[in-house]
Amino acid sequence: MPALIVGVVIVSVVAAYIWIQGQSEGGASQTETIQTRIQTTEGLKDMRTELEGVRKILWIGPHADDEVYVAGLLRFARLEGKDCTIVAYKADNRRKKLNQMSAELLGCKYIYMSQYPGKNVEEEIRSILAAESPDLVLTFHPETGFRMNKAHAKVGRLVTEVISTGNYNIKLFYVLNKDPTLEELLGGADRAKPTHYLDLQLPAGNGSLFEVKIADICIYSDAIPAAKAICKNVDGMRTKMLKYELYMEYGSNESVKLVSNEGSSP
Image 1 (cartoon, rainbow, N blue to C red):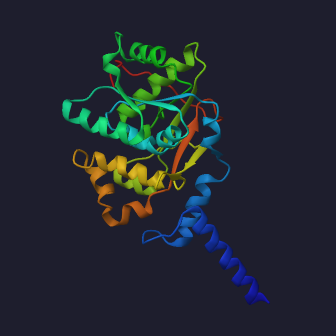
Image 2 (cartoon, one colour):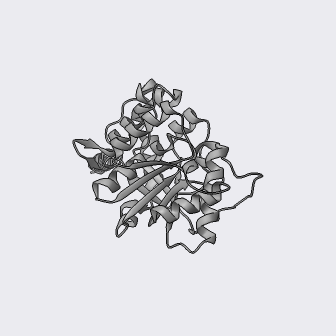
Image 3 (cartoon, rainbow, N blue to C red):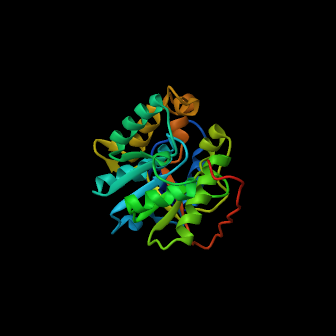
């Protein structure tokens, strides 16, 4: 009888592992992977519920490739018939071609903040919000910016300041990096605790949202070394990556400290 009980427990653990992550190839042990996945999503809300009733979504990041961090959500939203717009600060002609390819893959519109009227980035953000009228805005966390990137964090602060002090009826979410693989590759991660998740193993056409995200990253593989490493699956990187996008809702229990910086250009 004890042996039978042990067998049932083992089967249950394996089933949970398959349900949460799918098959694993190398990297961390199965026990470590199971614990990571369970701790990642336990107690979190499904981001899909936040998209119900949302008509238009806006992603705002400083760099003309930052949308790869939210590619799964943008593609899911488009498949649900929602309008999605990607905002970056500026780009040269070569990067604009890649941006267009990314936008076509995700089904989004790509615009540049620097083309909108305003004496500074805050005014440009207000111009964009007035022109696009989004119901939900995604940006970086104002403290650590996904990978301890100052430009990411600064835009997160500016977007938060504009929305929190203006008369807007807009949901605001930060994309968070809690993935050990990406932390090692990108040189940092967010300390904030997520409130929501999106399962990237959800279907998206003939593949999954995760496969769409990888395809979007691969668009930038010749321009960005980190994107190339993921696209080439160096050291089985894609197998080890979390199959989730993690988000934190502005106004959740965890406070967001807005520290003003000199200047307003990211």
